[in-house]
Amino acid sequence: MFWANLLHLSFNMWEEQEAKSPRGSPPRLKALLDIRKARPYLRFDELFWQKITGKMAQIGMNMVVIDLGDGLQYQSHPEIAVNGAWSVNKLRKELVRLQTLGLEPIPKLNFSTTHDTWLGPYSRCVSTDAYYAVCRDLIDEVCNLFHRPRFFHLGMDEETASHQSLALYAVMRQHQLWWHDFYFLVEQVEKNGVRAWVWSDYLWHQPEVFFRKMPRSVVQSNWYYGKVFNRKIPYVKAYLDLEQHGYDQIPTGSNWSFPENFEKTVAYCLPRISPGKLLGFLQTPWYPTLPGYKQRHYQAIKGVEIAIRKVATREGK
Image (cartoon, rainbow, N blue to C red):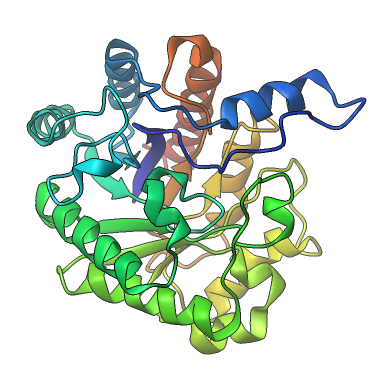
């Protein structure tokens, strides 16, 4: 079983949003809207990245999921990269360093239309021939760069109108088109000998369709960031439903709302998901990889450390 952390090379996930936050909005919402604003330059600090990954290795974590976005100068599509984006050679060297630390690097490119600002002009060409060609090229290139990784995270979360209510440009796929594009992306990953990995929140809203159409080969990451774990909560029940239907899972927690969420996620899922279907756990701090957010990042790692210790104690290690 692995213990993973999601870190961002690129943090350009959201379309430009309404400049003014709603009247009376709490300071955190205003700050969140500012963080979400896409920038034409890389928001990333390499030294801080090295500190975070070093701490991860020290506490026994063994996987890092890297959200690449427009933070890489793709050879197939260099026009996507922002100023300061990493070269392909730089990434190759970093992947070696991570492996030396004992951290398995896994690529992530989120193709949800709610989170695909990193695609640049192609984010406004969704479901066209040009779009499919770019997606295919990027997936092929990344699979090659990561030397056929064990997984490839495709994102695909929150593609709804409500999640784009503040966006100046909003687009969403639904019904058969969503599934057509989803199958296309999975096919591009699998033809490279890699396993597709996605967020599972489609399940929350259309469970019958989800279980009829979602391939068992695709790894599922249901996510829930609350304090209370009760099967009456749909987001919590999803873990049990995925288990019942035989999917491989990587349950996902976060310190986004509560610092103790990750350890609670582990405590809830570990006895309820069969060992053969529970591949590991993923932590998601959801902040740029910058020193200004170090407390968030270190808090996230601390949550994983607590969970690892509790599991080791329970198993008598």
